Length: 505
Image (cartoon, rainbow, N blue to C red; front, side, top):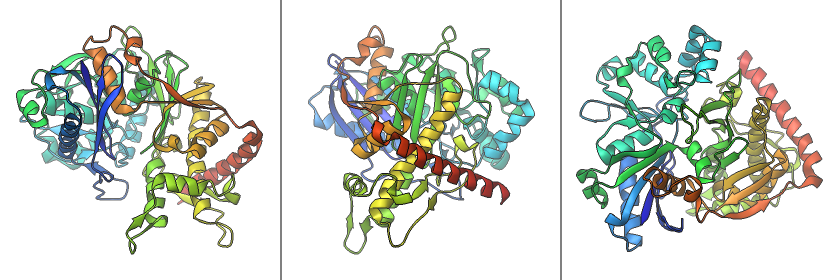
């Protein structure tokens, strides 16, 4: 008996087939081979074609099936993890009306800020736990204001994972957890945020059918089965945003549990059973995957948008040569970074060059390289300062989370992305003063486990984590904590100065 999990990211799509009995990943595939592109029509905008996600789902599914001798009928359930906060709109024929406005697009910031004031900050925070800010609801309002011809054709709006489920099944559905990601969920009333939609002049009829996060949501259609090589009737048993799903994949389900990731974005995600919120909405609370009306477990998320793009920018511009058709791998860059000393000889980087940053109250301050010495600093210093800058940004958000009662001594993460770098993992543990536990999992494996829960193959959550193992544990390097605390304070001073400069321009 097998389970298939998809992770629909903004950089790539990954599929993994797992053995339900052992939890072992039998085969994985990702596409495209290079990072997926974004449509950037204006500064601060970011769009992707949803049909491209479906193309890569098709490619990765066929690759996975080709790698292992598994009959499609033995694949009993499918789970979907997806990039959060994106907007997909379709007409009655389920045709996409415009490219998806994805998570890092900043165009709706002003719309969300106006709604925060118009509806009332206390109303928004106490009911939605967040400002409408730059989330899915505000992006839909942007379409209504700026593309009325397209808006008039909208039958339903969806999140990216809902779109993939629609392509698989022909059914347009979403979840309460997903709606909460778009600031479309009223926590007090355990229902959609009709108040916000009414304020935006958007009919609640555009909301898809709401299904449980875990459960038999739909089945693979004959058309999709023929396209992918799957069996018709295969159950779709789970869907969740990438960060709640990352937490689930690490068995982060209880209050006090903390998950982290450092890939396309850098994230700290903490579980809470209290309806808490940050008054400045710098960190955001959503309904966690195991949250229900009776037990409203929330996940509080802090995010740094500029994580992956900073590393990608360094690689493309400093660690590659078009002339000799050579580009350093990320492991090679990580090794070069270790050749620079801790603190990078005073070089500091603010990793905020990828749109509006929530921890900065949706400000766009750009990336900053400060203290560059043309006689001292090398590419290795830049590589190290970039990793340290990302960690300092995560620590900055961690401090905000601590202020609303989310604290932890242990952080769980997948043994992947930037945590593959021993330098990054050790520095993260030292700067945040936490024990870091790395596990043999990723988002697509978590989605597969979730599908097993939703389809009833696993009788409870704990049964779903068979085979999950800690691969490494990293303790804080106490001898360097005072040193890094001083560097972090300098980094914070640089950030505050940049915020002041941005405010006055």
